[in-house]
Length: 136
Image (cartoon, rainbow, N blue to C red):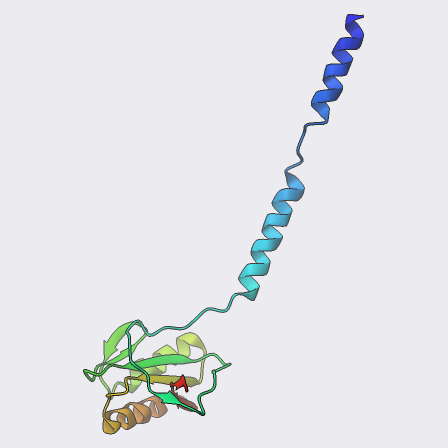
């Protein structure tokens, strides 16, 4: 009689086993899916009050963000540069493997400074230079 009792207990324990290998596989598949489908926002590291425009469109290619604050400082890759520093623009473009620059200028930036930075971006190797705006 006792022999039947032991056999019954072994069967009950065997049914409670959770296989971890398929669970781990599914977690890795989901992780890969989220990594591939995530888009990373590019940021300049400073806050600017961008102007509004009716013709604003999102940029779909890889780009280098360049910020101009209302104080007149130019920021690339989180650090302040001179408005005429084409070498830093060229290095940053090569690091990103990009040919497009998006200038995120504050609405209070003088037009002369904006054009000076635009010319510097062109001299640094940018094929396309756009100015960021908020959609109206």
